[in-house]
Length: 631
Image (cartoon, rainbow, N blue to C red):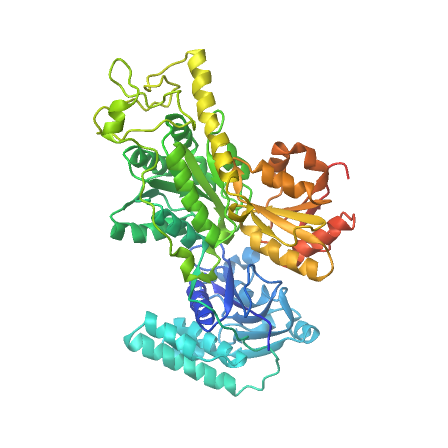
């Protein structure tokens, strides 16, 4: 039986590649397989080469695979004008020509000969022979036009794929019946069956078949964006403001879909400054609120972020990273906004920052972000990237079956306000120095006796502007003490309930460290390395501020050397670790990738072997290795 299928569907933006791949992935999940998707698309509304990989296996999968073994190339029906070919080349054929380098030996190619001509690809036949590829040309466009509409060639392609892999069409048909009806459903079912029947007559030259599996409990197919959305809703968020910007838009869209039915509000505003300001205003009024953006949009939030820190207004912000600087590559993943997220705004930062590594952590740590923000009265930021935002993975449905928390956090009732400290003028001392955790309880506008000023200037306990040196020191020390108290609270959980993810044998000789979306890929690489005879373990750090010094110290002390894996060009996370734990600099080397694609497990395996062998060059041209200081 085939160990895994990695199916790549390629076409043009606007050709339905994303929706088709999602439906195919869901069908595979329902038939008992574990699935993981990887999405690649250009920053254009329509046209431009795009693809989605669906990796399916009887065993859990946490990452994209090393290359893929089955290609469905539909061609780009929205290609640019041929006159622009001198710059962009033959875009129509790119869904086939640009996907050959990563196709495994012995792989399967199905392409739409109604739109694609292999004569347009240099050395195509030679490469097919050299790599033992199995090629099946099918006039998918012609079939779709004859039986329905051209857009239905996706359905025909799925039918051919199912036949070649000997996969039961019933799973696909069931999904279609859930999503369509009437004549559209009947036509699609006819095209699906006709394409499968035609493909069944082919002389199969390949050994690839659909793997078989079985789930022990009900599964759902979710992304990191789903996890963040569900976590925010379950933690009582009922207000979101934002402005669309890839890839943060996915969470904004999901929240906008759900909030009205929950009595909540979603506001699309004119820019990101207004979005963050509205969220802060809603929170000040007593509602759990959220905003977010990506790249340059989050940069505009620096001013209101500082306001939230100074006024101690709880709010949760999302930063969905993409390749920069400036507009950069807006639809490609990168982890290069770390320093921006940690230190943007004015003066000394006073915030919580989490970087979840998968969809489940996105749910859990978004809930943590809201809880800590509203208990300690400070901004909490969830930082993630396009990879985590859009990749789909199956998880048990029970993961999201948890108690909601509508608690408004560290607030006072009117009876409690009457007993609290007040200035002789009658104003409530909202920013009182005398507090155990650094955050004095807040009142909500309209409560009797709860009147105070919320100013962006430094202030007395009542909120009135103050530049007194002693007051400044007292207020600053109180605000910063929140991070110390939060860190102590998180450390009390212990390793079993930590936000940091550990993988591999505890007594391993070598370590790999990462953060955010590369977690699953690193863990698969760790498994491969141990199977190959190495002794290695990993830690994925999610608590970026306040930093988990105890946990990371224990990990680094336990290994001979550590490879730090991240998607940026300047080793920002490694610098952050060294800034907190400088003495471990000689132990830490970097493996970096910043070409717009996330790591594959093999690249991390190769980087680790480069590190342990004392070499300086990684045997691939996609990653960069930087040895430890002093090596």
